[in-house]
Image (tube, rainbow, N blue to C red):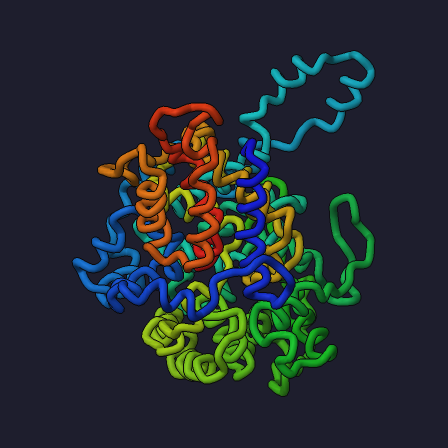
Amino acid sequence: MRSRALALLALGALAGCSAATTGGAGPAQPSRADSAAASAAQPAVDRQIVHTLNRLSYGARPGDLERVRAIGLPAWIDRQLRPQTIDDAVAERALAELTTLRMPIAELLRDYPRPDPTLREKIASGEMTRQEMQERYPMEKRPVRIAAELQAAKVIRAVTSERQLEEVMVDFWFNHFNVFAGKGDVRWYVSAYEREAIRPHALGKFPDLVRATARHPAMLFYLDNWLSARSDFIVPAGPNRGRKAGLNENYARELMELHTLGVDGGYTQRDVTEVARAFTGWTIDRPQTNGRFVFRPSMHDGGEKVVVGHRIPTGGGQGDGERVIEILTRHPSTSRFVATKLVRRFVSDTPPPALVARVAATYTSTEGDIPAMLRVIFGSREFYGEDAYRAKIKKPFEFVASAVRALGGSTDAQGGSALARASAEIGEPLYLAQSPTGYADRADVWVNAGALLARMNFALTLASGRYPHVTVELPALVAGTDPRSPAAVLDRLLATIVADQAGPETRAVLAAQLTDPQITRLSTDDRGSANTDVAKLAALVIGSPEFQRR
């Protein structure tokens, strides 16, 4: 944006989110009283619908409020909890050209091979030109395509899918059971990992998620369990033939700390070692040609184990790991830990203890049924409370997807790739969180001056229609509004993009920009009528604190 004033406005508005959630210094932002005053004229049911769309989906599209109102909010939530009942043909058609999404790991390893290690040497020596290298090893056959198509698919689904809650939960659980697509063979496994381990169980049973991720080659490779063996195991073949292998505790530690019990879940270092022993022999069959789970008894430590007080007798084989999963997923600490994370995602960065307790009790009574836990959250007074309304800050990916949806946008595979790059530029490169913790769901991680200005730049680029293969429908958003009246255009944009929920301070700051020549498209001596720059105004509304929150 060329106007320094508009850039400062954007940064100030976004910084208000940080101050509101972290207590840090920043420009003034709407208070709870301001928010209440802004919504006083809005019917309570409509306000609940707006709130629910912000939390259970990647944001409202034009007309979504009316569509949900027509069928009723409870019916809409019930359908979202049963995604198989929702026709998603539009999203499926957009995904059709992303062929790697449906390919088994073995085919991906075959069709997207590793580069010949001698190519770089041949280029350096002059034996081969870069063009010759491109012809021998074209971009479309390189393994980077696998993650790139998965990134594009994630954007397409978030923007166009009717199964919005399913997409939210796939993102939530992928971060809970994170793998890093940039680590070694995971780049060939990551697409199958989401398709086979995460997506089928995202609205299923939590123990099934743990089992599916524990057995998947992506997790086995990412946390090195595929190398873990009994302490006296000697590698029988391959480049490491004759070497003594050993126990690797990486997966065991993260299974308890991040996947089930939580860091304060009551386990000890001895438990970590015992769990690691139980998972010895859980490995990958021919990682670079087949890439499937296999249990190798010769690598397994068959001795007795004791995990958080539970005895696992000798001779259990692969069943030792299965027994560990059963023990951990039934543990009271797991019910509290999973309940806390779900309540943090859907209600508040500081999860209300009473709601966490109710969700944890539901976990226990239903053996980890995810829809049952979500129903408790979505039907709670805490979910619809004033303190929860627009209290969460959108992650970069959530911000990107919600902005496209708010502007009535659509995208194809190429546009999905462009929007995935935008998410990376703002701070969230998809499937590339290196830590096992995945991407955080707290405001303090995402709100800083550099990232906030990047959000504003994205908003302007999007609203101006400058992302290839991404369409936005600005004329439809302001249809019937006099373009010669910037104030009228602003009012319409606030009504459609933030459901008329901008607080008095936000409105005042935005209204102060209406005389700027960039907004009115006037030169300083132009005496003609205004012609409002809808794109710049829309970008400013997307940059407002109210839109940054969900």
